[in-house]
Image 1: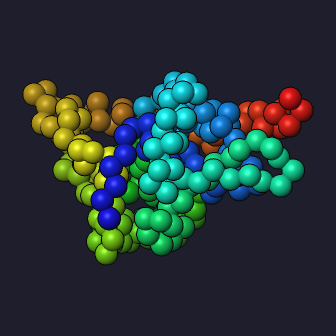
Image 2: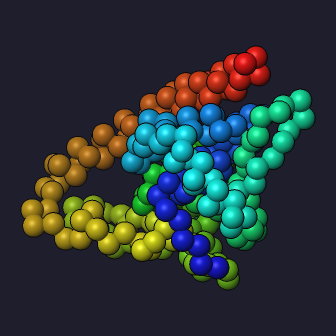
Length: 221
């Protein structure tokens, strides 16, 4: 099944999947909460600053393809939104967690995916992540993921999703660089990535609390 998403549509879909898996009690999402989720400064690459009009256009496009539903929940007159990834394929929770991270943060190594998806789904080890990735790559309705060429100065290959055109990235980040980073620079980058992942949990909790507060506040407006 071929699905072509814009970066904004991918961010919306990834945010809906994330909140369903990480904060199910506050899902589906109101428009305001979804905008906040799309514009989070943590667990996002790149960070976006989408306004209401851009998110509504993205939602309308996703709804026209039955990838997102607008729903009304009990005791709430405010429309809410939920994803409909079941329209694509019957993904397991492990596969959905990996796709969520790829939609939100772009290409990542299996190790990064294991660490960053821990807030969504528990993997028994790196082999379990790699198994789910291979299932996405070889899916009978896909492929939905691809293994990317190794970057200069890096030891591990990254994986990307195949929901956005023109497909797997072939930009400057994937192309050979004239001055490949030295081992020391690569090690420094790895340390920075490790520190980033260490604070992700705390920052994610703050962002989720903010979204919950906005939804609670909306009930009294």
